[in-house]
Image (cartoon, rainbow, N blue to C red; front, side):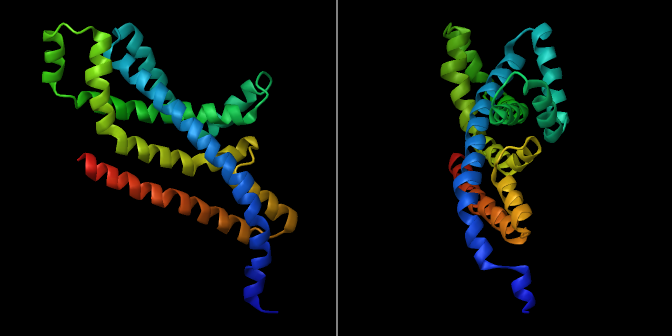
Length: 219
């Protein structure tokens, strides 16, 4: 028997590819998109609170953010699933929220840096014009902060996409889970896991190139 055929089978590769794309990649993409939206919105809210709220409010937010950021995503997924699964029917919803809240902590730091990068003169001009604080944030600070932080936010979105395989610990049928299930059923892991990795590469690499171009354009 040809040793090459024992290591790789195109029949198995073509057999598992539709499930990886139609089921696994779809679930992975859904978790990434929704998780990113949650992280973007909550991260901005947390950054504004930490920047403008009184210390009695901002300090607890800082502690919570640091605690979440310093604990492993896998532990958070398992813990949230154990605590919330009796009350939440959708394991996917739990996974998406955990991803979003975990990456919210990183994006909040990115937003904070973007807010700090807004020139002091912009704040002073808004004060001189007697703009309300809400309008100062909405019309002056946030647009500049987001423009300055878009590349970094995009990089974290890619990182979230590459970390969706951790959803396997709560049995969500994302792309790696589908590959593992095929391997355990057919006793052929090489083709499924290799194709899963290539799909991640094919999806994330072009996105990273676009983010680099965006970063150069904004610079």
